Image (spheres, rainbow, N blue to C red):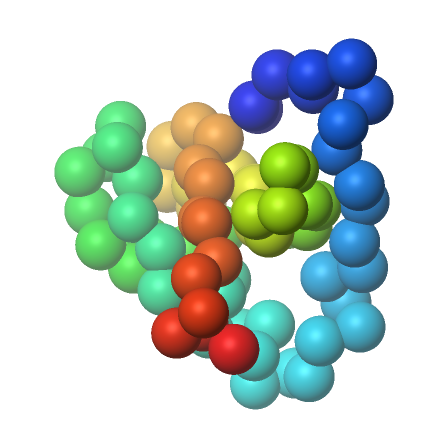
Length: 75
C-alpha cells in the first residue's frame, strides 16, 4: 500500500462508479509480482493523493498490492 503522507489521502467511493466502470478497473490490471496483465484485483480502495486518483487493491493471483493511477483517458 502507498504510504499515507500525513493524512494527505482523500478517500473516494470506488463503489459509486457504474458497474461497467468498476468491472473494467478490477479486470484490466497489471501485477508487478506476477508479471501478468489482466490478472484481476480484489479489495479495491479508491483515493486521491496530491491531485491524482488511485485505485489500490490486491492481485487475484498472488495477493500482492497493485495500484492503478487514473489518467484523463480513464474518464
